[in-house]
Length: 369
Figure 1 (cartoon, helix red, strand yellow):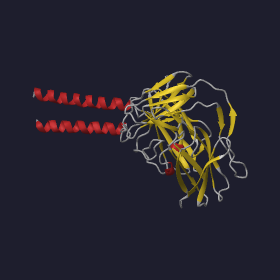
Figure 2: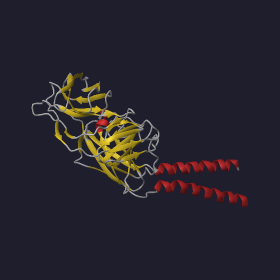
Figure 3: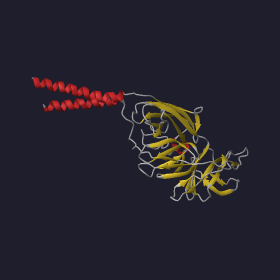
Figure 4: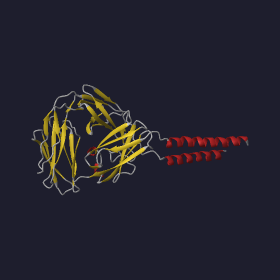
């Protein structure tokens, strides 16, 4: 009789201990997390959206996007075809604030998006139950184009992709130097649903080039700046020091592309970014432009604040704001975190699982007795 009471007391204590272990983490809500964006809230696909926020829960913020055409669990903004429930990571500053730049032209699966309202959600990596969300209205323009990679090095294969909503069979692509002289001229077909994709190997000297896209059946033209860099002795991309300021080329009212305007500048000291990662071989983006793979040394980086994003398949992406100083080397060496298969369970689901597991334990124990 006495031993039976002891077993019952032990069972009750064990049950309460398990519930305490399960419930406390589920309701631990230390700190806050927030998200906002700059601008009016309506953006064209192809624009860069700057998000700001604060995370006093932990050091790493994760951001996801969801909406029409995307899983309701959310996916990484830079991989719209990624694993549902995963996102891109953002490193917080010492103050807990963070900034995230989303260049939608660099996102994998951008064609999955449509003109609609999308929700961006952030949560802390160590405590994903602390979340904050904001909605942004994205507009799919009638005519848009993206260059990848950009900057590019000699022998790189640059892809020019985009979409035209109006009826058109093909587009003209012109690559112009800073004097407005044509370097390359291409003609690319347009698919039945309006998409085009054309690529070429870079054989130009380092410097800025205007890439203009037009068609006789399209009233307006688009122009992008392609930056060609040199390659260092290790074969990795090294940004070239520039003494000019390049103004993005535009088209005039007649639809004829205007060559980029170049104004003299003043030489200044530059810095170096020494980037590595675990695992190695991750893709590195400097200010949303593909720069190479880790380990990577970027020379002649303009002093100031830059955003470095590091991506590797199967791992959460890392986005870090770094301050580059002239004449100095800044090292970045993150250890990437493997991407989970989904967001953690909700508190109620966790508690229910704990109760069920405890009940099963007691049932088995009772049967043995």
